[in-house]
Length: 227
Image (cartoon, rainbow, N blue to C red; front, side, top):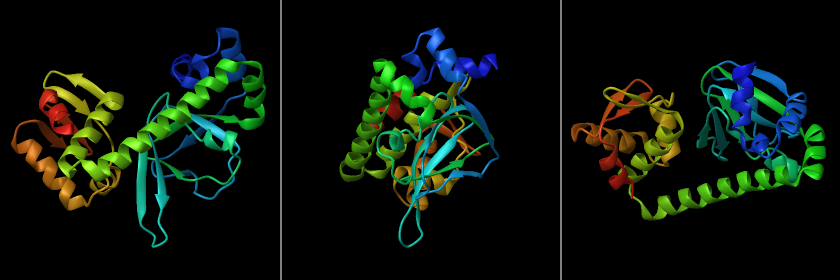
């Protein structure tokens, strides 16, 4: 429980609260456990809760009319999602699926609204979270227009490294837990093109490819390629 509380303290929602307020909000939290591949909610479902990941990873996806799936983002511990429906109570705009075995803290909107009205800092943190998501969406749209696939691959790997990377003696280990197809969806390109970019990076000695992971060996080169 102490470890869970520590993860929750780092979540934007709890950062705005003092210890007493955070403890009161944690009392309203319900724990949700998902197995790998299990769906938390689907696009179009009614939404009345937001979630903070306490362990594991969750992917947010959308499905096109023709059935093709697009991977919007991958989230990990302390990251929050589902808050959009708090301000705009309409059906979910994406599906949430566990990438790994995952534990979440769920907060009902009815429990959260008193904190928003009584603690302006909570509302500001939620709006900041939404603003960051909009900024990331704008960046992705810009990259799709102006950045080539290898550049987008490098940028996505660096983003995953910032959130999931762990330093090792031989480099920065990034266990993204994504299949080749999922990584390609995240980049917004075909699996073949993304694999070609990864192979080129490996050939140049910038990274090493492992099962659902990479080890970044030359982060400066990767950063320059991501520009």
